[in-house]
Amino acid sequence: MIFFSDFDGTLTQEGSGLTRDFFEIIDHIHKHGHELVIVSGRSLSWGHFFLTHFPLKACIMEGGGVICYKDERDEIVEEPLVSVEELDRLRHFTTKLKHHYPHVPLSADSFGRLSDRAIEFHLMDEQWVEDVMAFMKQENIHFSKSNVHINFWCGKISKYLGVVHFLHKYRPKVTQNDAWFFGDAPNDESMFELFHNSVGVSNIEKCLHRLNHKPRIILEGEENAGPKGVLNYVKKLC
Image (tube, rainbow, N blue to C red):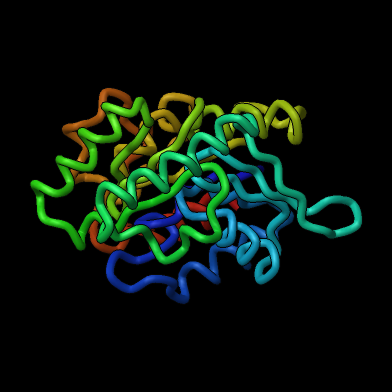
């Protein structure tokens, strides 16, 4: 089996970051001969961290904008899923954004991002957030708001496109029955639509009303929030 999972709020405990459950999830999946692929809006540099510190073969980072994986020599390879022209346009826009809003709080990991950038919107008041998003619309820049960041990018980037590309190119023999996805937020909705075996950890309950495509399995109770829910369910499967 291959397990795809969102990271923030799914493999991390809200307000607590990495917990023992996260390490146990990785250990359990690896020990039973299966694969975990993290699908996250976090930076490419986080992908390098995952691959160098844990027994993972690949990650899909920056909301689907870049795949990083270990090749046959165990070296990390980066594959951006947007063109060089779009990456250049993103760099130019980021400079323009900082000129218009000098104090915009770009995320601390922005230096390690390739295909997108992120803004720490929780450090901004509501009107400032609205102004920045309006500026992005004016400049034809794509953006999305997760539970931690406003991510913005150029070109076609999504978790859906990233996962489909990864499966077709790198795991073509994986069947629908062998693939699972775990998530907790509206930006996982395309994954819930793509995967028949989709699981929402219990903390997704607060945003279920916003989803047209809900996970097929919705866990309940505090004992199934975030990584606790992932671990409990994975243990039922393997």
